[in-house]
Structure formats: C-alpha cells, structure tokens
Image (cartoon, rainbow, N blue to C red):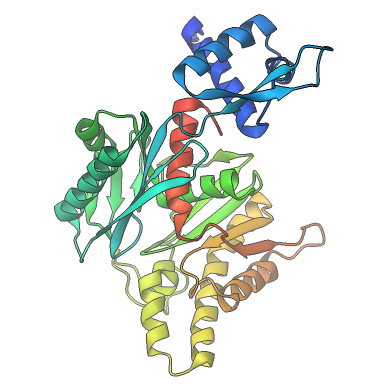
Length: 370
C-alpha cells in the first residue's frame, strides 16, 4: 500500500505563523493592547507577551500610548505596527518607455520613487536597466530592507523566472535569482497584473473575488477568488492579451491576428487616438477597445459568477467610453435573472498600482501580512 507522508509542523513554523497572526491583527486593527491581541488571535496571554516582545525587539511593532479601558487603575499599553521598522523595495517594469521603482514603508507609503528611462531598450539592455534600478533603490533605503518586490510583464513561474515577456524580449529569464544575487535580499517576482490585483485588495478595499485588468504595454488581468491569487497550471492565468477576439484585427507580435493586445494595449490605443480627427472619433476608438475587452472578459465573468472588475491604465485610456462599452458587452453576454449588477470601475490607485502590489507581495511573503 502506498502511503503519503505529511510534513511535520516544526516549532519555528508555528512561531512564524503566530508572529504573522499578531502582525496581521495589528495591521487590521491598530492600537491594540496585549489583551486585545490575545482575544482576537485566540493565543494565550503568555504567548502574546512573548511574541510582542520579539516584535518590539525587531522594531516591527512599537508601543503607542495607553488606554484607560481595562482593569481599574492599570491602563493598557497600546501596540501598533511600526511603519519605519523596515523598508520595502518595489519595481514596476510594465510601462513601455520606463521602469519605475520605489522605497516604501510597512504601511505601503512611498518614501521615494525613481524612474529609469528605457529608450526602447529590450533584452539584455532592459535587464541591465532593471538591475541598475534595483541597486539604486537598495542604496537609497534608510532602514533595514524587508525585501524587493517586482511586477513584470509576461508569464512568471513560482520561482520568479520570467518564462516569456515578448515585449521585453525576455524568455526563461531567472529574474528573481539574478536580483537576489545582486542584492542578497529576499526577492519576489510576479506578473504585473497579478501584483496590481493584490494592491486593489490591500490598499483600495476591493473584495475577495475580483478581476483587475491592467492596460499597459500589453493587456493582462489578475484574478482573485476567495482572496487567493489564481496562477493557473502553467502560471499564465490572466494572460488575456493574446486571446484572439475575432479575426478582423491587426497582426499581433505573437503571430496571431486580432489579439486583444492589438485592440486595447496602451501603445495600440494611443496610436489610434492620435490619428482620431475629433473627440467623437476618440470616443469611438475607446469604445471599440472596450467592446473587445468585454468580449474577452464575459466568459470569465459568466463562469466564475464575478461581480467586480477594476480596470487600470492611463486616465486618457480608462475613460467612460471604454468602461461603459466593456460593461455593456459583458452584461449583454452574461445577462441572467440571478446575476447581480456588474460593477466595472477604473482603478483608484493610478500609476502606483503595480508598485503597491509589489510591496504587498513582499509583506505577504516575508511577514505573512495579507
């Protein structure tokens, strides 16, 4: 008979889990006492005291005043996540003409940002620019660094290898390994649309079931189901840019005709908008792109019963003309008496969505804070 061996939970694993539990509670409910933490987490007061002591020593938590609520005559010391306890490095490689980087605190507040022009660089030249930006961010940090998060176009596997990023001309690029070797820091690399959907959940209060479309040099989507990021069997979930939407579009760089990217990517749309003779033609071009986006998303909405879609991209692209056309198309193709009203909205995070999501990725993996 074949048996399956389960990995035993080591004491250090349990402690790491408990530390994450305390940090998560302080992230969600700041200014809590030790007694509050014990009640909220279900851990004993002795365990909480021990864990809080370790977090105070590490600088991740600070004591912040007292509360009169508690036993008479004995105010409770309040605890809070220390935003300056660590710096987080984040990079956004999704734009066509530049790379963006930031140093953020533990609340996700940018301390500084850096921009590296690409000037059309791809392949090895783009990689050199990304490695240089990472080194610049690490040198600019003023507190211990928790890690580096990277949002990149293309398909990224669980090891942080960029399997394919056609627009950057990267294939089987071990980006995480290279950056870790350069900086000797924890590094997390994820698809740009995937980190953007994490940012919507953490920083914009989005629901646990969400599609977040990312319009940049390509078109991608991040998908949360039950608050969990969906990667797919081949790490390519959400790669909707090369889904062919009809056969009447332009020839795509991937070799197919009519890919969504040829309709709704930022470079393709900007070229159409610049050629438009008037505002009516601009709206018509955006509506056409929105309709094609709706065609790509309708099967996903219908299959998963999704109610919330967020679209991120430049403000001149994510206009009412594009969003309304996408919504109308999806509703028309998925209409049912049982289906709730579809909410399709522009992202409130602007151009920082990928940077914030890259920071959220580091917080999740290094501290367990979701």
